[in-house]
Length: 473
Image (cartoon, rainbow, N blue to C red):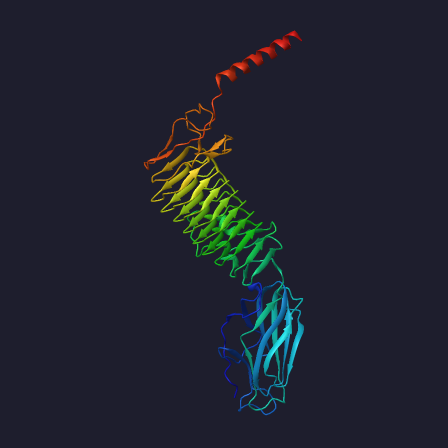
């Protein structure tokens, strides 16, 4: 009488251990070329002779089990464990296409134990096949077990190459080798280790699916081009577009986002949430479809500097409950709001920025956002500034040059300031009152000095003499 064979569900298993790029080894799928005998939780029973079986043959057998790994960019070793009683042999094969197989290990005659096989040369999607070979030498109570803690590791190199969405679980420097175009994934590059540098080398990380969806389109998850919740993370030289959030750092300390281009993302090009000491520098951030170029939420002691931030649907830069950050030397233009600070954004410094051609307000400060210092900025917008709380709109008079080339640094340049500098110090003679009801004033507004009358007279005399000389000649 034949034993009942069990139908086993497809199982996705976490892989242990040594990988440097975890997408190659984090998850794998199991397929069965013929029926498996039993799934025992921590292992599969591949063969069970059973005492009621024939003397000279197996009662039940599963000839092939195939393990499918994700991309293995720099393969090294396969590790696995066998167990059982009185069995004959197992042959192990590897492949990149599941059709052409290479024998990588043979285990003979009741060879219980831990095994290692060489998988170097199998870069890409890795398939591993375990083939059971039984025969008349198997005893009445023979059986074979394959334990599930199977591990396909990658070589630990100083520079790891990435060609598809992946999870990074080891410190080091990682390089993209080509554009990554994908969709329906939560986090394309998911950095789960401290001390990581991701250098895209100018390649693109692109989700085309979000590009087609409208602002209110439903989504089952938030997608990110690059995501990390670890410390000492650098992302540089990337082109990132089409995601809900282009780059997101969550609870990161000492992050760097440098020399990237982010555009056509859906809600945030860069989102820092609960960060500290993270710097965003020399990036091009533009054409966010429905949201914000850079958002800081609950973030402190960071720097946003030397970025070109333009043509985003809402804010160029948006601070919420964020403190002690410095925003400086940026070009912020053609957004709805240049910079918006909201809901207890305090003790931030905004200086040396060109904030121009923003459609609603250049600077908007509201809802308990106070004690921020704003100076030496160039404002030329539909409405230059709006402030409902109490902030500082100039610094102490100090030696320049200032943002319009004057000799001293003090307040800001406002395109709608109508008064002149009559004494040549670079400041208007009348303070500039900031609208919004917060009793805010720039006491040292920047202005272009008036040209003294004597210099006008000398200039007119010079032009007159030049005209006479031309007539004589």
